[in-house]
Image 1 (cartoon, one colour):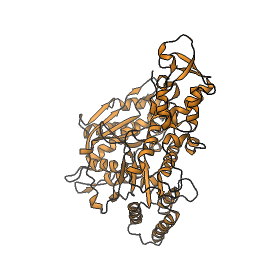
Image 2: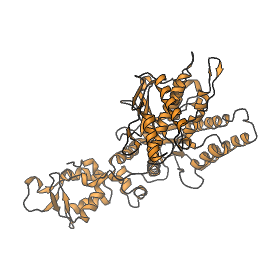
Image 3: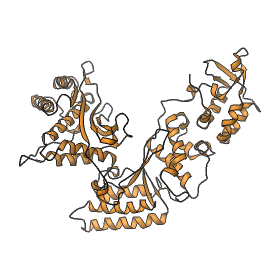
Image 4: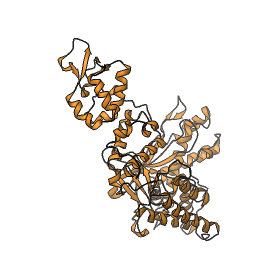
Length: 503
């Protein structure tokens, strides 16, 4: 059994009121039994409902400590339940884990919170609960079931309490919060770097900011005129020798805008509900001031377990473990991202043990570029050029034949050659080719084998990088280090834009 604490009345108060009314006062208590409380006019419940509807949750907390709901039935009951207190109500029936909040809903709610805390023309709320339960609440319209999601409620409550402090924003200074409105800055900057400059396949490969805070329309117009001038110079060929100089010039403008808090891009991640963290990226004055040490390769986990009954491989995720010294251990997870279909595996860095928070996904468009650079290297005074591509669903063989079998056998052999036993923690790798053949024979190219093929292929690529090690350069280390910083969008040297991460 689980029970409410008094500080949760803002989160659950409205739902408790609704359920009491629907069930005509019937409620389960923490002793597992059901009780009927008085919900008539002028009852304790009626007063409780009135305070909830008014959003007076600060007042409700001490009030609940002094008042209990009157119990009508059963007539015979334990003395402890002569009345039913807030902390004696069974909490579990008021929450569910099946409800999911979408990313765009998370971003909209955070934007409203920031607008409320930092805005120059919005109503000031005493708490997030008061803001959520207010009449015609825009947050409630976005996601009415939010009180049922404890983790997300705590996340937004924390943002409400601390966002103005952690970012050192000047209060009541932001008059423009452009997100989905026509002409918003997000759409403008995304179109500029992806379509107009044609340097990235998507905006997040350059800057992961989910929302942009802008002080005024006048300031937005001033900066856009400068950005448009950069595009004009690119079109006229002034960046012909180095097109990426255009994005560096944009980054320089955005750094200046950030330092003045004129334009602030914010990347949103879920907090732990206890402490809101605010970290700034790519804002150093000089490139050399941003220290980006190499990570150290540790081990690879590759599980090739096969289920003959289903004709499929059971594992959907594999990992490469790295160490970043003081920051701790991390793992590059490469995994299925397509359910039962045939698509491309994804790559993202996650913490191991006490390390910091989730770092982010590695942009696939950049992975392809690095791979070409690192595989096609001079080794022993000769250029080694191979047709090696990042694993993709469209590149997988449609049918099984002897040549396909030989290729896979060669890849498995090469993987085992390049990684020692303590560096490669593999399961059923020796049986992988035979099992893959069996899977093709039964179901052909299928979602049951597509992700595993790509995961094994990626480990083979890591082996190729290790084989290209020279006296001065360990290309596997270079590659994993690039993945590590690109997952964070960290590194002015890599042309990432300035932003802050709230998590």
